[in-house]
Image 1 (cartoon, rainbow, N blue to C red):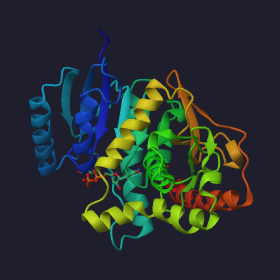
Image 2: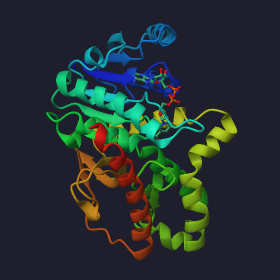
Image 3: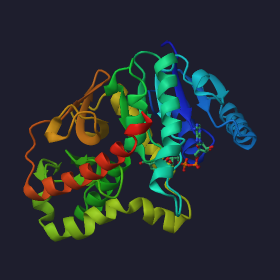
Image 4: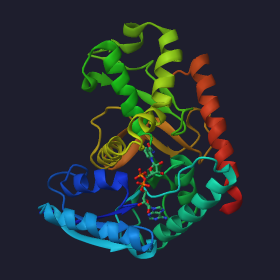
Length: 327
Ligand code: NAI
């Protein structure tokens, strides 16, 4: 049987954590033959640590055959020790009335500390996924704080946007969601993201031709996907949690186990692809194989798409410029 791998999860007592940990422990992320050790991080606050203990009691009570160990931590320097996978979920998302500078300062502190801890103690091949918002910029901060690790091993979660886009296209075309191939989401995990179905196919046929309605693309599809997070908060009174956890599972599973040539979206540090400046943490279409992602290159970017990409890039550059002094 396989040797257990170490999976660190931050914000483990939060909403997403509650929808995520059980699925990791059951083998949905890394495979039904891969034992895992969970290294769970929460803030030192007594209530958070107590809540974490409660979640761990429930995980114990599932008697998961693949769970080879489980630890509670309040310090990233111990939580990330030798970790092979790190899912950084805990963060400080923007609250009502919160100033941008305040948001960036708080997350700057969290993600510089966590990046430094990963740099110091994690496996040299650690795969990092940042879920906590602002996800792209938090991933950028962590990457810049970990100079001894491969920058390409820091990623941000765009997969929820990707899955939301796939679901809208399935509803519009009346086709099963699993039949949609070659979908891409470019840019920031924010309402400026650009979900792009120009290359998408269903059973070999072009989705763009099937829909054949640019007004729907511009006025319905993009705003629906872009504002989906807000629509869920409005309906549920809480932000997306199970769907976010599901996207995190999809992202890590595909990165670790491969996509068999199919496209998925990951937020990754640019190497200059499609004119996106180096190191910008940007959503790109990728395929994954042997634990590595590879950007889908050579796609044609038309005028409308370029406009959308420029807009989401400008937003990200603004965010990433705003944290430079913290790094
Ligand atoms: P939550 O508030 O229920 O849980 C967050 C948990 O993180 C709390 O238990 C908190 O104590 C913990 N935490 C905060 N700072 C921490 C730190 N420095 N170290 C360790 N733990 C820390 O929030 P929820 O709903 O679980 O969401 C978590 C994050 O995910 C939020 O930032 C949210 O905006 C983001 N999110 C991102 C999505 C994406 O697609 N990228 C989608 C949905 C949510």
